[in-house]
Structure formats: structure tokens, C-alpha cells
Image (cartoon, rainbow, N blue to C red):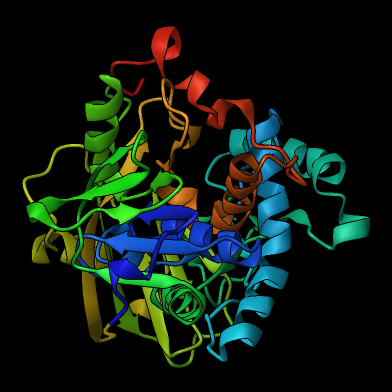
Length: 386
């Protein structure tokens, strides 16, 4: 196992979830010496889930956040291909597309307008990504026709990935080219001494800077450092069913749930969002509810065996957008957290931007201003999510 004595490092990263490992991958490729320090194990938090839905925002009320996500989702396939070539591991990525049922005439008219706007925002002639309204009964071999009395939207930008396979590939790359240590809890950073402080009296790690990326627990450390609470945890739950004959189907989003077939013969259902929770364990009653709700609009799920269940606490900033960048009042402490449901789709591009900031370069695609610390702290801070 790698040792903290392998330093000094250019940057240390607290947390081995999707943001932390993506940051490490990008930093190593930029020539930095990197250590990832994980309190538990790779993917122990919300990144180790099951769903893997990579879904775009609607092409409406366009803004820099939606443009950034569009660019991230557009470039993710090439990024995954490169990572798979670097590691020899498969990440379970596929551009699967997504079905959205239209349940009222108002929604039909709304999405007809969105389809028109997608031509401007998604550039289908150049990208091939389309957002089309199809008539009632379309794709009824997968989505129950009674769930979509006014037709469906089918869009081809949506994709899916195996979260655990993606983390395995990223962690393999980091172990080969950097340092990744599990079971080491970061408690702070001494800027004067350039040392990462660890719990339990462990010897500090020499590093030029620290990136805090430890899921919802990151908000505790950020509050300790800045005196401001800018986010919270929100529990999600999902499950995998047997789905060997469903691998080529598109994802469905209906009744607040995703159904996402995967190439490994499984189909994921999820996920819930609970602001109030007492633990991070999966509830059998909640899993039964997920199956009942999903089967109502996707009858092909009926009677399929449950492979596994998952629950976890996802990090959500009060301002909804992620927190990416240097913390106020510090020179070498950064944060990358709060991605909530869009983390897997944007993590690689977020990492490129933050590495550019740390190394003093201009990023190829700038972060939205709403991701920056100035939008989360001080007079801009929200006490709670609106």
C-alpha cells in the first residue's frame, strides 16, 4: 500500500469519490504529484451508487450552467475512451438516450417548444444530439402507453455509466501514477507549513495545496475553515434488478424515477431524495416502493429479481450548483463538492477547470460563475436550499 511518506506532493485531495478521483486524474495528467487521501474506501459515499444516469438539463432558459453541462456530456465519451485505454478497464458507458412521457396537453406544447430550442442549443446538425417529440404509443414496448397519453420526448444526448466501474478505472489510474491511500481522514491544512493534517495523531502529509472533495462531509470541514455552512446531505436510494434482455433500451424518466438498463445484464431504478434521514442504509420498504412505482410505467420490470440495493448521502449546496474553487481567506485550500445528481456527468470537466486554476492556466472551458466560491460564501450565501 502506498505511504504518505511518498511526498511531498503538489496537491493532496481529500476524498476518493467521483470529484476527488477525477481531480486526481486531471492533475496527474497535467504533470502534478498527487495524493488522494480517503477516510474510508474508494466510492464509500454517494459516488458508489448504482444508477449511473447522465442526463442533460432541458434545452430551455439556457444559461452558463446548462452550457457547461452540455459541453461536459458531449466530451465525456472521448474522456471515458481515453481512460479505458489508459487502464484497460471498462466503465460501462453508453449513449443510451432518454424517454420522457408527456402526460398533459400543456406538457406536449411545452416540449414542442423545447424541441425547437434544442436546435439552437444542442446543434443537432453538428453534434447529432436530438430532442424530438413523438406521438402517443411511441416506444410502447418499453414505456407503458397509458403513462404517456400525449406522446413522449426522445432525446439522444442522455447516456449512462456504471458508477463503480468508472471509479475503479479512475482509482486504478491514480494508484499507477500517483498515491491513493484509504483509511486516512483529513482534518485540515496548515498553509504555513504546507502540510495536510490527519486524524488520530497520524503524521501530516507534505503538500503544496489541498482539495476538499469528501462528499457531504466536506461541508463540515469547509464550515470549520470558513465559519460558513454552505451545504448539506440528502439521502438517495436505488436498486438493481436482473435485466439481461434490456441492455440496449433507452433510459426512462417518469414519476420522478429513472429506469436505466446497463450492459452487465442489470437495470437500475432510482433514485429517491430525502432531506430528512437518520442513517445511510437502504430501506427495504423504500426499495419495494421504487419497484412498484417503476413497474407501473415500465411493465417489463415486473417479477425481476433484485440484485442489490444501495443508499447514500449526496452532497448538495444550498445554492444548488456545485462549489468549485479556492476557499475564501486561503491561498492553497480548494473545494470540489456539491455536485449532487450531476456529478458523474461533469466531474471530468470540473477537474480540468480546477487544475487550471491551481496551476495558473486558463481553462479550455471556464466554470460557470455560479459554481465559484463567490456565489456560495459571504453576502451570497444561503442559509438553506430554497
